[in-house]
Image (tube, rainbow, N blue to C red; front, side, top):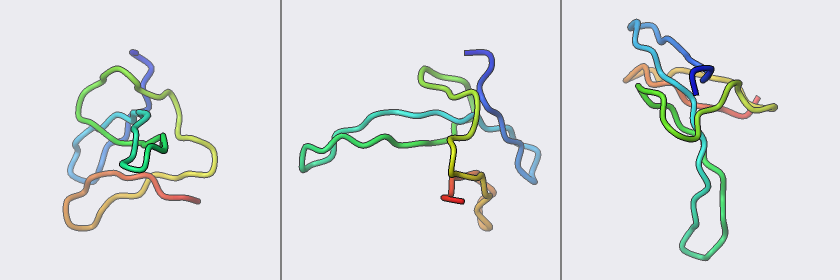
Length: 67
């Protein structure tokens, strides 16, 4: 888990990229991507193909956006 993809925003805060499988209300399973301040289970080593990291203007929180 030490090789998690990290992103440091404009405020100098470091976030780590993670993924998780969630079950929606209709029963469909969907993979979600999220950033956390610490390394947890489900951390990723790189940004998934077809995505890029962008920073939200208001909070500086990183999010994945389709490229």
